[in-house]
Amino acid sequence: MQLAAFVGAAMQAYDIPAPIAVGHSNGANIAWSLIMYNSAVLAGAILYRPLMPIDPGWKGRADGLPVLISAGNADIIAPVAKAEELAAFLADRGADVTLNVATAQHDLVAEDHDLARTWLACKLFYRGNLTGRRAF
Image (cartoon, rainbow, N blue to C red):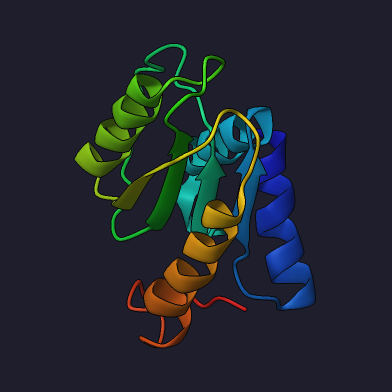
């Protein structure tokens, strides 16, 4: 995937740490596909209202990668079941997945932002980034 190659090259060229991917809807789908192609280029991921439309057959690993998935309980575009499927898929491949179901439809709500702030603090900053991945 070109995006994974670009992120990896930028990290090396500019001596910057791995980013945390954040995406909503299709942006979340792009972020989790980046995990699938090369999880080493990320320090973590926050996926709002993602879908897992197909099983990509990925057999790779995402060992220790912290991933927050937030679904909306009334979302008819990206149902909770799809978020649960993606959470299980990533967890089976070693990701440290946190799944939240917000009281929301497809839009983002304050609960999503509050949860992400707390999750980032616990998973990446206050704990000294237990994943061993250098993050900024």
